[in-house]
View: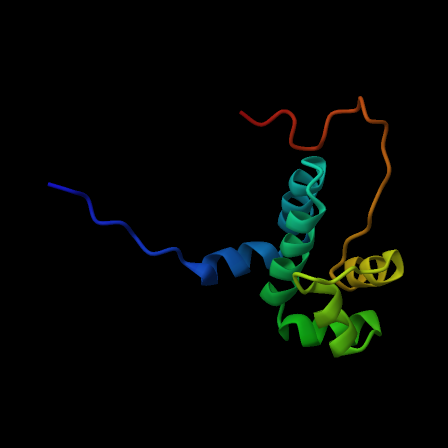
Length: 109
């Protein structure tokens, strides 16, 4: 007899991504993988999870909604300035560390 699968609860994921510490950990792990398209997709997921969604993040970041939607689209090529403003609106910032320094999640099982 096969087990029934449980549908993924996007509401729970969104709740987790609203927390800046969870969002920072999520984005950091993806960024460490080096796949910029996946990182862009993760930024979009974090923005959508916020109260007000991408539109709300755009307002907080002081960038146009259209600009942010375009930057986060599959074909988007966001400028560093846009990413920095968006991250600040999310309560996050980018940091540069030595490549040989372990990530904040390196001690997880």
